[in-house]
Image (cartoon, rainbow, N blue to C red; front, top):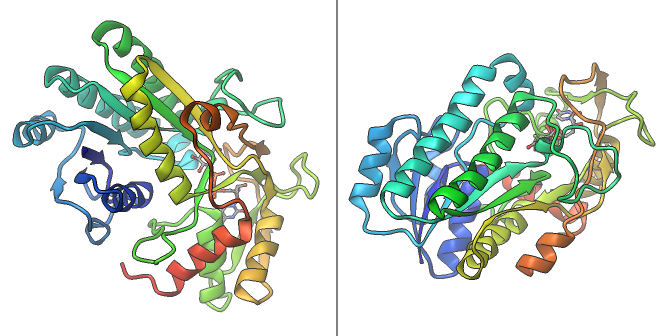
Length: 326
Ligand code: UFG
C-alpha cells in the first residue's frame, strides 16, 4: 500500500511509519515539525507542510498519484495547554482536519484512520470504558477530538469518506530497537518524566500531581498501552475499511489500570533504583481514572496487544531514553 502519514515525525506517527515499512508498505510523511523531529522520519520521504495551510495540502496531493490509506496524527495534544489556549486547539485540531478532509474529498481519497483519545470521555462513571459510554469531554483537547469524530460521521454520510477513529488511552514505551522513541519539549508525560528524573540523578526530581484522588492510593489511575500496539491497531483499522463502509470508533488500551505510584514502583524494578518524588498540586483537567474496555477493537479488528506488562513497556522506554539519538 501507499500510505500517507500526517504527523509522521511525531512520537506515535514515527512508530507507525516503521511498522508500515517493515510490513512492506510505502510511506510518505507530511509534518510541520512543530513538535515532531526530522530525525524520526526514516522510512519514507518527508514533506514539510501544515494542515492549516491549504496550499501545502493541495501541493501534497498534487505531487502524489494516490494514497491507499491516510493516517492522521497531526494534532496538539496536551490537556493543560488546551485549557489555556483553546483557540489553538480548535484551529489546529478541527480546522486543520477539515482542510485535510476537504482535500481528500476533492482528490477522491476515501480511507482515513484518525488519532482520537480517551479524553473524549471526560470523567466516566464506569470502571472500564467501552464505546457505549457517553462522550462528555472536560477540556478543549478532548472536545476538539470529539468534534472531529462527529464531523467524520457527517463526511461518511455526505461524501462516502470511510474512517476509523482510534481512541488511545495512555500511549507509552518506545521502539524496542531504540531507533525512535518519545521526545517532547517540554515533556509532560509520566513515564518519560520518571526516567528523565533517574537519568538526571534526581536533579530533575519527579513531581506527582495530586494524591487525593478517589483511588486506592490517591494518585490517578491510567491504562498504559505500548506505542507499537497502537501502531498495529492503525494498520488493522486501515484493512477493516477495505471491507466495511462507515465511520467507526474503537477504544485502545490494555484494560488494566495503574496508579502513578504503581508506575513509579514498576519503573524502580526496571532501572534497579529507588525513585524520589515530590507530591505537587493536582493538574487541571486530569480525570481520576481512565481504563479502556477494548473488546470491540479486539473483536472487530482482530487486534491483540503484545505488551501486556507495565514493566516490559517501561523497559522499552528506558532503552530509548538511555541512548536518545535526537
Ligand atoms: N503525572 C505526574 N507527573 C508527571 C507527569 C504526569 O504525576 O510528571 C501524572 C498525571 O497527573 C496523570 C498521570 O501521571 O495522573 C498520567 O499523565 P500523562 O501526562 O502521562 O498522561 P495523561 O493521563 O494526562 O494523558 C492521557 C492521554 C491523553 C488524554 C488524557 C485524558 O495521553 O491523550 O489522558 O486526561 F487526553
